[in-house]
Image (cartoon, rainbow, N blue to C red; front, side, top):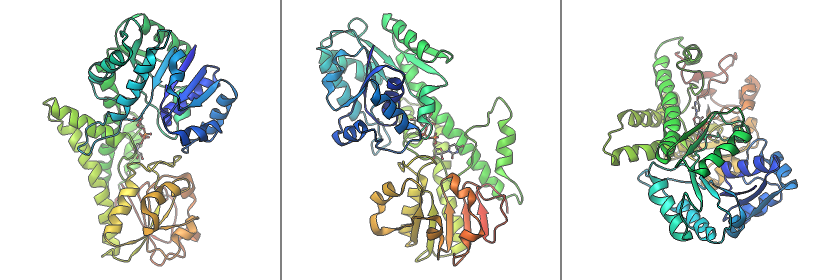
Length: 435
Ligand code: UGA
């Protein structure tokens, strides 16, 4: 069994490494030569816990990395894991996946096996039938269902737990026609993940399941964020106690009820926009989804007004941002709320210093010399007038009076309630806590 994986981002590189470490013969392909070079040397192009270890293990076995697409010619299974970013109007940008599929199609001509192509990339309903399938058939001069299989196989892994999620997914979705290829795919996944439910459905349902999943997660976050705003108006109220308690109701569930500055990252905001756009063009006014987005946008305004209430005019005020990654255990800053916050504070002419254990380099690529970069939390807080905890990095839990003592005004805004239990000699405000 030979497996080809096209696109070596979080999903593709995790899958390549996990399958190879399990002994599969894997070729991971990416158009980016520099990225391939790094990976061949066992270096991950982005920070993801556990990834490098398992990648190195895979490389010792049968993992090959290349930018040469013809290597998929002798593959039995080909996984498409390229990105599907958004256009400026929020709709999905299919240009990358179209290109990848077209190259796969051309190479299919020479493939003597009857491979199955699994599409893991997030795509709006109808894309498999209207875009992917016609391109593959045209470019290969072969017929889907006869010469090759085509299956929608959306991915649910989270950055920061990508390896665990790849090894132990909560579900496997297989969308497509009920052919011999589907049977083969089911057998493969039953062996790979023996106790995991496998849902077999059609392409369009598989496609929308992914959006349903991400938009429901976003809804939970906006729900708890709106409640956290209400809590702030009730002296002594605590949003975490609410989340903990309602989370015990099995109909609700405890996850994704952690109030904060709003959801960010490369998926939730983009997928919400794509689903809203898709609903609109389908003639449905997605009022709930739009409200979820609006709550998310307003959450940032809420933080800015908390800062302004304490500091007044922000011009020349020294503000420290602790954490720029969109969540802990990643160096990813794509659509990070902290980055948006910095942009807005810079517009108001504040002087910004940041600290992040992993995302400094990526942050520097955006702001260059417009902000200051501190190597330690102590340096970041020294002479600052206001510190804002944006990302829930474990090390920020340890912050104590000792670290805050060199601030010139000791205002701390904790968007993750990390220091709530501490007796601090600071002016402390937390999202979701009524003062
Ligand atoms: C998300 C989904 O969780 C994955 O299931 C999905 O596969 C992935 O998108 C994708 O479509 O590729 P990810 O983007 O890695 O995964 O990030 P999440 O862990 O979902 O976090 C997203 C944002 O929500 C972060 O900014 C995080 O801080 C925020 N969040 C999350 C909260 O504010 N509160 C919570 O309780 C949970």
